[in-house]
Amino acid sequence: MLEFLRLRLRQGTPTSPFPGREPGFPERFRGLPVVEPAPGAPPFDVGACLFAPEEGGEQAAGTVRFSQDFRMAASTRDALRAATGRVELAGALDEKMRRLFGRSLRLRSVVAGSCGGCEAELNAMSNVVFDMARFGIQFVASPRHADGIVITGVVNRNMREALRATYEATPGPRIVIAVGACAIAGGPFAGSPEIAEPLGIPIDLYVPGCPPHPLTVLDGLLRLLGRLPEDRVRAAP
Image 1: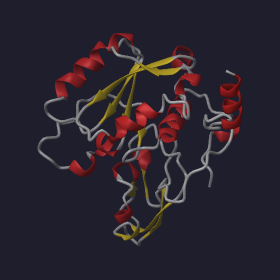
Image 2: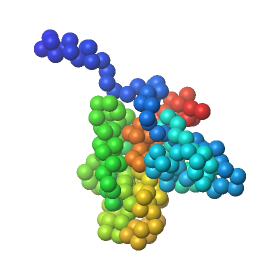
Image 3: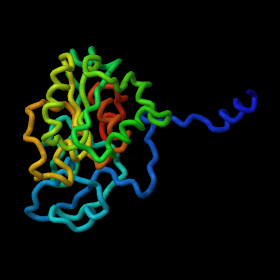
Image 4: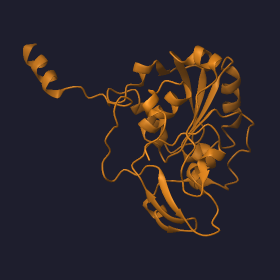
């Protein structure tokens, strides 16, 4: 027992220092795109970006490089489109919703047609490193027990009604979060006839990435709940 305690002391605390301090990322991490726009180019769409190496360098939108800024969750779809790639970060819910969900948020995951990448990152949010439960956020097995739903993957035709039924089974007021390029813009499958038409479900938070880093998702959730320290509300320049 004493040897085990000594080992734990040597290991230290593995939980990420976020949001108290800036987390560190490896050099190869591809975060928020930074664009030097080409004349007359359309806005760069972070929501549709796959964060692949091939998307860097000279592109139709201009010269693209990937920063190490993990903050890119937005409250609206339009907030993910900008000539420079800069995202208008998510704002907090209104006071009533923050009173309801600010200290305890239960979410039901809906995998609407995914490769599994986004779900792996969402699963990682519950491990000892990211530990989203310390903020009162958990995934639950039933929409009846949930405060909102998290959609991952393209909404294909076979999942259309399942997603609708899950949304309707979640008690109101509820929040809806679209995680990953597929859920936001169809990802690499954009334009496929297998993608269902928009369901008209209102989205409260868009989290870009392919897949998004767990801290990108967690940062978006804490912004939505108004739980970030004041000096962390804005992204680093």
